Length: 432
Image (cartoon, rainbow, N blue to C red; front, side, top):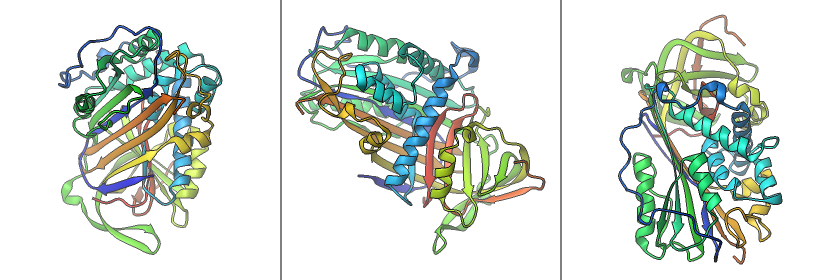
């Protein structure tokens, strides 16, 4: 079931990735964890300067970015098929990160299927984890002009036994904070949701509902928050009401922003594409507008198969861009899409997550929530992915261009440095 709500304005981008509710009846030796909940207060302002990097771009295994982007394009394509002509906005980075946190707890054919869906074949688990760690470091320190924070946490049911190695790897490879809670109390859900709100600047209000099910043993949560402004903001006085055509005979009115300048831009048979950089130019928004007479569904199917398109350099050209100001929220059940992509065993009784617990468990839910807001100053976005696991018993332009985004379009928020697709969407009805 999908729920969507669309509204409009502002400039910051958040990702919250609630990654894995694990449910079971018992396990092995309990790991060393905090006996008290994590502090609810958000950490001090994060230093996103490049000088704080632990790694350099040369340390990045580009296979990880390529795999995550390929996964994101396939996921987007599957969801677009499930929800035709609807606004669609997901975070490939977030979903991949959530699945990665449970990936090293899977064994046998369950791990093989998750690896294939993540497009991680040809990489061993150590290579995947290290590549994910380097990518996280580079994204977080994309320069002082932007703020992109990524936080991970694990919330364990008090006294439940789980493999120490699983928790240790999440601590070391994903920087996960670990806390133990009494899940029988409603306050446990409150504490987790408060952590979510703090780490996403209130953009995601929560992911856990009370009471927590009796067979749920763990939540793994990844939260990403990005705040940035356009390197060249739109002028508010240039924003005017203008028509937008969800289809040739479906006209609505939007607040259309406008600016002229020199942009990375190309026009090909079937579409126009433009990159709008945020301050520092390490992160940008890619907007792809199908030509009149081309459907967005046809274009996204074509470009979804062309992985090189998303990281291809475009020539800089003088021109004018008109883009709607809008806001949207959506939610998705990702299990049907993941099954179609080939991840099936993780959801049935024969699932092998023996790297998490001695007792048989399986994934029971994969929920995704997203948020996007675009205005004259910049962009704000958020996404939450919740994975629940339970016991198995249950070309260059010659002339100045003019690109008016007044019909359905593709949109991506992307690291210009690494190529990582942070968010990917299809916008049919931009509304405020």
